[in-house]
Image 1 (tube, rainbow, N blue to C red):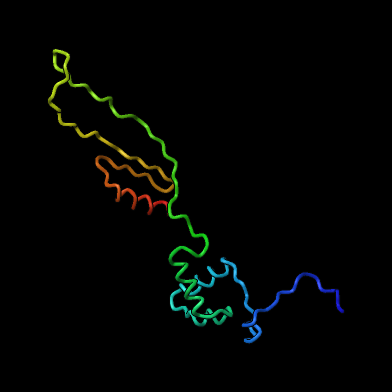
Image 2 (cartoon, one colour):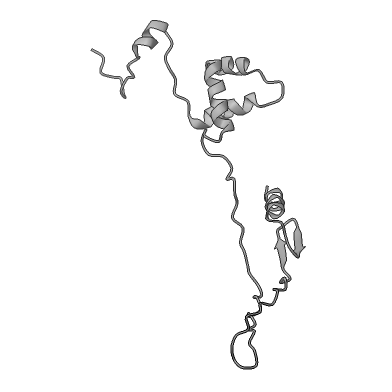
Length: 145
């Protein structure tokens, strides 16, 4: 009996014994690399799968997971930016009649002039007036890539 072997042996499953192929576990990083190879223009999934000893259907499955963001870590979808708030809103003016009782008449609110100033390493942006939240979001996403 040979006792010089070190470490436990892996026991093949019945299907591995029948097919003669032993299953290899791939790390998420390996799967991502293979998927990213298939995303190159003109790449053949079948050829890439064959080169890595993987079934093409398995690689297609990993591509679906990758495209839905479920194959390991991806770049964070949202970056947090440091924010500094300067200035303050003017205090609300009370409307009262000369007799000391509040007036029932409501004065129309004047729009408050607003300004957003964004300073990044590569750009500075100032938005004055009413800013569309969707536009600001797209702008920030483009600048933080």
